Length: 189
Image 1 (spheres, rainbow, N blue to C red):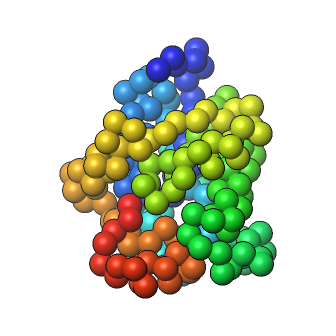
Image 2: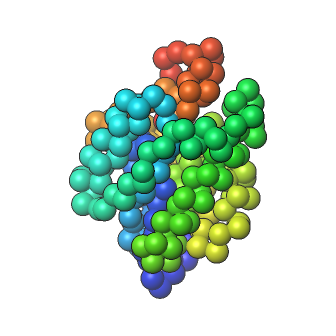
């Protein structure tokens, strides 16, 4: 992995279990990681705040900065309007990824950070190719496939090591509904 000269990178994080192995890998390769918690898709509010709490915990362990976006689930619902009944990995998810990457790109610009990426590619429940396609429109986006090199297995291990909360669904009420129908007790992150 070739590391650019200015190594600051804003990392969109969906949760601490996905952030841990992704950030670890970036840090091992010389990147200066700034975590960005931007997840208006997460529902209910309590779930959002619980995930944020554990991202802050991880940032404290690593002594890195966490930038926090405002939480506006109503705005996110407007963005995916009409796609509520789409299956997981479908057009609703694509629209959600686009929303997150756009917000991350705007924050990278605002903070004058030269690069950004997302931990969304770690989960086996996400289509990395879809995320990479969306990211192509942003010059600062660096496409990392965090699934590689056993990223998800590393997530499980680091979650145990750091005592991180591992949720059982992606984040939105639609993925919660789908996870309850398929397997109510298996964590996805």
